[in-house]
Image: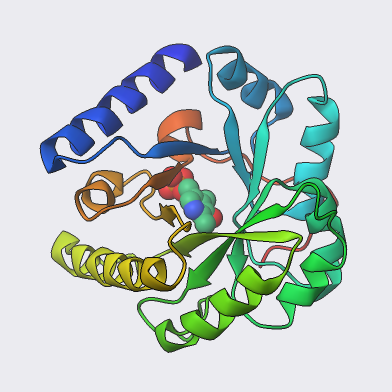
Length: 233
Ligand SMILES: *Cc1c(COP(=O)(O)O)cnc(C)c1O
């Protein structure tokens, strides 16, 4: 039962946080490739925040679940030409990683309902990964903070999938240091989004305030239906 899996996952998150002497982070349920019915089951069990990687896939699910009070987070790469749709559809965008996206999102959002924004950092400096360089965070954060229709909430990262947990721990630790520095300039930034199904306990130990979990909640990802959404990144 999905409700049991959710309860068990929240329990593990709580234990990891208690072991680290930290408050429990928020759980973002990553629903990419999963049907709206699976989202509805988790929502019925009390889960409210859901992550999607593709704008069109999220639009379809959000429309199918319009009666539910859910919070939708974009966690996939955002192309500039999708910024308008993303600004209208999501409650959070976790993947702002270049200056151009800031006005593109801000323009299409009502300042009465600001869009929550995380800056995505390419913390392991991987050529294949999206995300800004750590040294680019202050300027990008200042740009987001200056836009009345955006609300700077913090940072997000997807560290390299290094098989040695210690190497990932180091990336989480560097993200925590960046987050602490960000908070000196922007004290209202409250979110450090890091940790996925196979490493969330480590991320929590290093200070994650939000973990993004897909397969551990939903099981293996479904194959994407042709034409169902945006091209894969
Ligand atoms: C898919 C995805 C996740 C969830 O990954 P799992 O290993 O299935 O938990 C988290 N964050 C991002 C950015 C993702 O694309």
